[in-house]
Image (cartoon, rainbow, N blue to C red; front, side):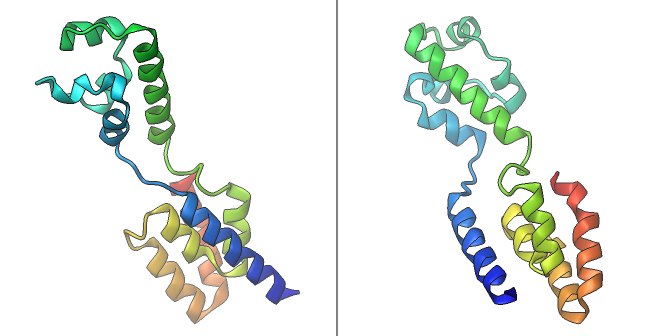
Length: 147
């Protein structure tokens, strides 16, 4: 039974790791051809000013009219950036995170959500290897950083 759960979790982590894409908001803008004029304009945009951008402001910045297709592309890109800005908590569901931490696989979830940067997943791995319970406690305490 424990082996089956372990294999199931490994499959879930493998598929979720492939599905996770890490993009910067500038990449989202550059992929959208209708609003690519922002990259050509000599204007430095940060994320908040991009989220406040309207078709009228776009015309003032670039001198080009967006049109219906461009306006929809702008709104879709802004929606995608807002979703990205909320954080990475949507990558792995909270219930799966808790289950993985209890089973001793919390370091995998932390690593995936941190893009394998930082020390949280290393510390959790060491605590799980030394003794299971401190790893579970560490994983549950660090859950606040992800959700």
